[in-house]
Image 1 (cartoon, helix red, strand yellow):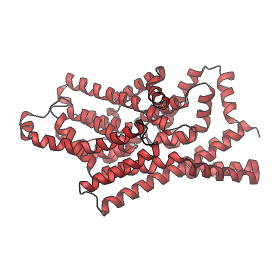
Image 2 (cartoon, one colour):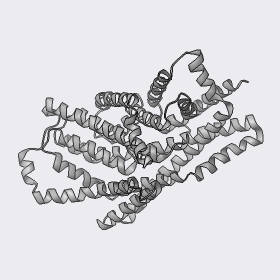
Image 3 (cartoon, helix red, strand yellow):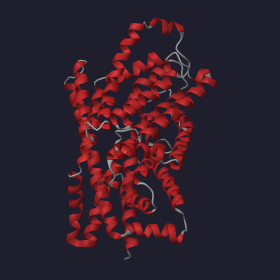
Image 4 (spheres, helix red, strand yellow):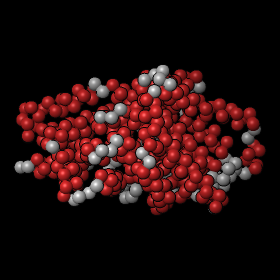
Length: 441
């Protein structure tokens, strides 16, 4: 059997295993080990072991549990709730102000957690009921929360970029810095859309009435401002230390985790229940990603051994006659199509052994491509029929928000994300300037 046929058989076997409902890491790791043993005999058993050792020696992986811990500590202790109440009071007098504040909240939560699930949970449980009670259009605000929460996988400390960095063998620090400006640009585009939409149609996002504003005294506003600033201060002090070169990436994550714990303790919200829930969720998320990375590394090693990447490159370039940009666009379209049925980690693990080396061979920057992949995942999160965020929203939304409303809500935000993806593709320095500037220092 030719190497090309073996590669095709590996890929199809893995897809079949995933369709059976098996866990992602189990399906991919099993296929990798079985094919390694089948092709190289006893020597193939070393490939999975080598992948495990590579994972254990990868120092930046320490940032993953520490940043996840920080996010869950802020969420479980209620410090993130303070942040939303601050935005609610200060942004309420503006048309669409609460929706704009929700986007800012999502950026802040993303900067504390690195997961879209955390933003979705906070947005759906805290922001959505309040927005609906204030008379905001249910279709628009449902889209706001889904789009805002998707920023969690782009704004540092993105867990998805950690996974990409491990598989693509790229520095996580550079990937995180590369996600800053694209993430802020996309958040700004969301805010601009909300502001324009609510200016044209005031009933979509009414401002707080004069009576409600009069009920809130200046001292209460200042008190909420102080409470809401605490989680933001934790993030910016942690990031500032890193950018000034005082701490390394791993040290910054430790500073963030310690600061979040001390803030919860100072606010008298740190108890056994909060600590237990935070540690349980942190352990669950961290172990899940470590198993997925391990399986992906083993699968990629087998693929590299087969020379499958060269075969695919030859197929696209020599047989189809496609140029580098045409191949790149095809890759992004395939990510969006896969994202309709799979989550981001499954997508990356399935195609990384094929796409990442090919992107490098075509002459593109792999840090920049990591940002493109992540933005494409955001789009895939929100596209029917099985977009990840669609089902999370359905599970968390109140009964008056139907599945039809959820599907309708994502259209303008998906268009905005597609525009943002195109802008970053055309102007790579939007992603690359900050890491180049920082590491040049």
